[in-house]
Image 1 (cartoon, rainbow, N blue to C red):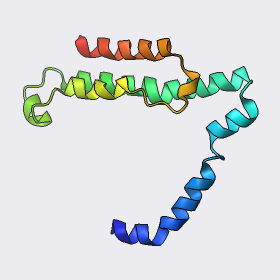
Image 2 (image 1 turned 135 degrees about the vertical axis):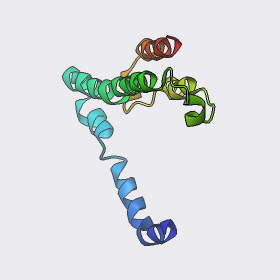
Image 3 (image 1 turned 180 degrees about the horizontal axis):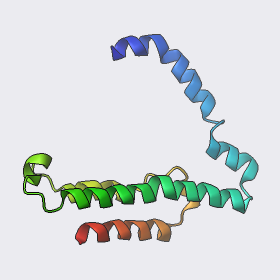
Image 4 (image 1 turned 60 degrees about the vertical axis):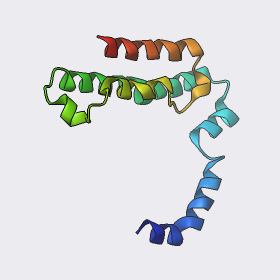
Length: 118
């Protein structure tokens, strides 16, 4: 089924993706608003809410619901689920990495690690 989809839409998707390279929010920001501190802070706030704070809330919820469950080994296949959930936090998948400095990303990682170590 996926092969049929790719055969039908491949060229159209490639064209669309190529056009989007210069028409996405980051490119428009860099081209027209790079010196606008207010927009820079709004993009950073969105990045923080969506990519950092939401993930921390998800991690807290997982820890709350999975901690102390006797069937946890069966439910997770015996994996160290806490380390698995935090592993992605070290990568810091953010939309606008150029807006963040290393100390801000490190502080977020430390918050996540503190959650898992408790």
